[in-house]
Image (cartoon, rainbow, N blue to C red; front, side, top):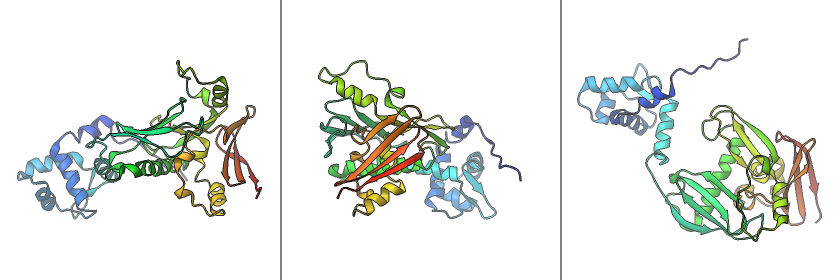
Length: 306
C-alpha cells in the first residue's frame, strides 16, 4: 500500500493575493454567515450586494478551489475559508487592545517576588519585579474582550494551557504542523541578558542555569514554542490523576502557579544521559516525572507522606 502523498497546490503569494479585494472578503463573510449552508450563486451575490453578475463571478472565481468549494447546488467555504473567517472573528486582523499591568496573586516561583501581567500587541507578558524571569505568549484580542479586569489573568491562563495541550499533542499552535520536543539546560536555549540587577545573587544564577527548558521545533513553519516542564505536563494522565485523587481538578488550577520556572520543583538530575524532573506537590504528597532529552517520561516517582 502506497504512502499518502501531500503536495502544495498553490504558492502562498497567490493565496494571499486572492484576498486583496474587498468583494472577495465580503464573499467569504457571506458564506460564513450562512452557517454551513450552501448558497446558490444568486443568493450569494445578493448577500454580498453586487449587482454586476459578471464582476461578481470574476471575484468568486478567484476564491473557488482554495477558499470556496463549488457544488452542484451552490457554494460553501473550504476549511481554509473557515480559518480566514475565524482569524477575522478572533480580531487577529481587525482588533487592537492594551491594558494597564495587573498584579498576579501568585509570586514568582523563581525568586518569590511579585509578578505583573501585561497585554500589548496581541501578547501577554508576565514579568517579575526582582529577577529576570518572564514569560510571553500570543493571545488573540477576542479571548480577553468582554472580561472584567480581575478575571483576565485566569482567562489568559486557560488559553495558555489549551495552547500547551495542543503543542504537547504534537501540533504547532501557528500552522498545525508537526512539532518535535527537546529538553535541555535553559542556558543552551536562552542567552543570558547582558545586564542584570545588581542585587541578583550568584546563587540565583546557578539555580537558573540548572533549570530544564522545553522547546518544540515545528517542522513546517520553524516556530519554536517553549515552556517549563510542569506547564507542559499539567495535562499528563499521571498528573491529572494525582490531583484528582486529592480532590483537585487540574482544569481549575492557576497556570501561573506552574508556568514559571521553579528551581524547587524542576531540576536537571544529570547531563549524560540527560535526565530532568518535574515535581507536583499537594499537601505532603508529591509526584515526580523524570524525562529524557526528548521529553519521554522514563520514570514516575510517588511520595506519600500523609
